[in-house]
Length: 123
Image (cartoon, rainbow, N blue to C red; front, side, top):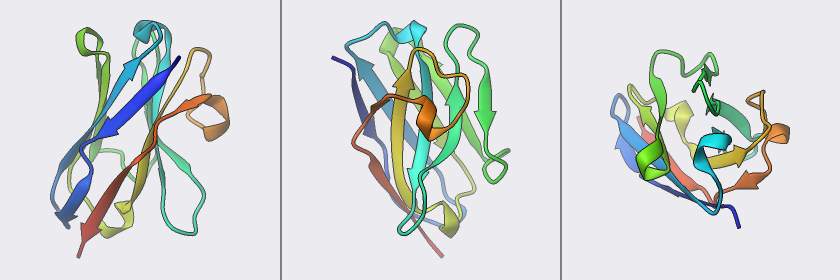
């Protein structure tokens, strides 16, 4: 059974940093693309950043490019999202997702999801 557990969320002031972790189990980690998504109240869930299996190609939405970095640690079966220069508009529940066939960083491309972790950025 695919399991994804997010951690690292919290409350931070504008301009601060957080590192989210997504620890995976129940599948061959290297064979899956991993994505970070977020959903703010009243808004659609959007793909923030994704990293492919194999060659670890990365994708970011424009609003986080240069501030967020996604990486994967194969030894720990963990994907990280380093978030710097946080803004109030980054406030959302952040979800980790996995899929063996995903090639696009979109919600519909990912089949397995974690429970989410809250990120709140105060101004």
